[in-house]
Length: 430
Image 1 (tube, rainbow, N blue to C red):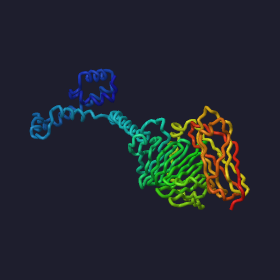
Image 2 (cartoon, rainbow, N blue to C red):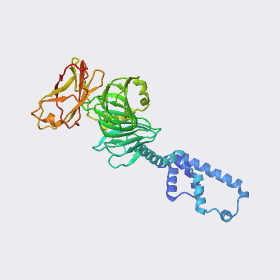
Image 3 (tube, rainbow, N blue to C red):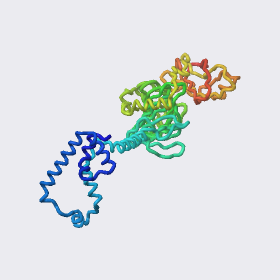
Image 4 (cartoon, rainbow, N blue to C red):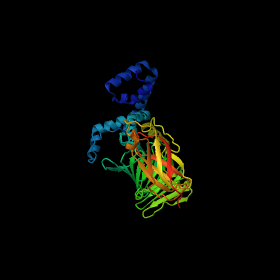
């Protein structure tokens, strides 16, 4: 049954004979049951009668519609248009009803906007087996060059980083990339980095800051002039074709020369060192690393991005802090070191063991010599010991030396358990 409000809106059309047959039947049924609406109808009828009588002398005796239309040739209108105009004037749509009609349109617009936002914030593709990181921040023009196809694209927040990808920042841009490990890589302006693996990158040019978690697998940074071996730390690396500079904020790193494998050095907290083409040394100086590395403080991943990274790429991974990994102090009693003897626990012939580099340091963290043990040697069940000759300066003397054994194999490689390190010393040198 129609309400009194609906009937009120239709009474004028009813009096003018403009209601449809069904609407007219509904209105008359309502009038038969509602005395108040009958009274309202009678008031309208009396008003009509009074108006008709009052304006009878001025009433037109003919229809002007045809005359008006004929004198407005530029208006393409017909009688139906005038009828619809009269209908809308007599029956204005309530504001609430007009608002309801806009709801589907507003909902559609909202869905389009939400879809655009989700697409802009979501990774461009699902992660693959080669996915080892995620762009956590991109300020300015940052680009990704895919390692498999060479395709160049804009690197936005939450874009995946895959093995072999190259990332570049423009002269006015900065970026941050989260890697498995976890490791946080922050890139300064005008920097190019290749993600070789989750524990290795190549800094082709520019400047980076890395926060590397302690792990049983070491982290390496390769530059045109040297290599930085990381034991879990926070540090800064600047590189170009001729020079590499390292600043350590926490922990320690090892800096070695590409062209001279015997030239390497351990860099400690609040120290800066550099390796340069044509320079036969690795100079070290004390600095306030917190101030020197302050440029990286403004480049940081947001909490939602970190949470997304942890859920999608880092679930179930636990970092293991290894204190003094492979580190042994050896007393030489002020005599020159001739050979180094390393022994390890029994190994299995069914396991593929990784290689290891051996670094021997003087008390001032400068190089004594460097050697190498192959994985085949570790895996030979007949061998449990190897003697490595001093390939460096065999005349210099030190009260003690420090031996660092750095495993090179990947996560699938076995690792021999080093049991002891000893040495053969000669007569007193110079």
